[in-house]
Image (cartoon, rainbow, N blue to C red; front, side, top):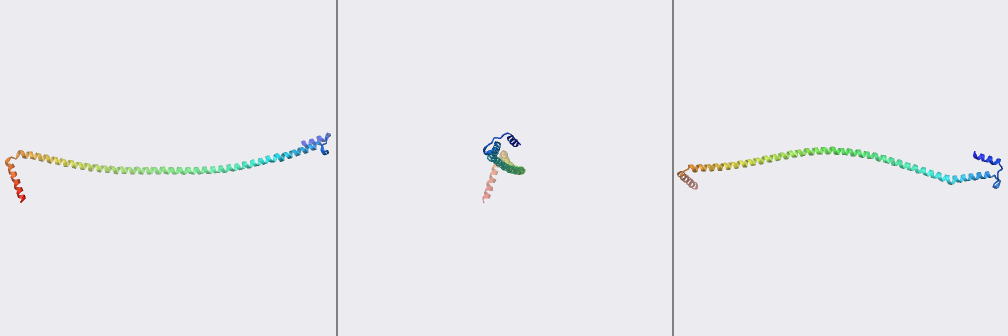
Length: 179
């Protein structure tokens, strides 16, 4: 509309003539159209191309971000699966460790009982040997005491005549044994 107003204004007044006899307003309009055409060709196209390239770059980055997001989600699922598997394995190790600990404890108790039985039998055998040894020693001492008592008794009750007769009996038994 402003272009129309400009034309009307120029027709009403005496228009200044420009080259080729055309009014100056026509030349100004042609100049304006040429400037706008050059502006569109040299500025608007590169800006449009720049915006188009920027839009393509943003779309590419968005696609990369989506791929990375999908990869991160896949890795997250994989990590959760691994953690669940590790927790399951850890629980199995705990259960197995507890069972092995209990069986080792039971085996140690059995071994301790066997060792205690062995030590008890060994102690009883040693006690029996020492008791038998002490009995033998007591028998020996009793025999020695009995012999000593008998010798004292015999020496106090045997007179010279009994001794002579015993000596004679011993010599004659030796002679008869030698024949």
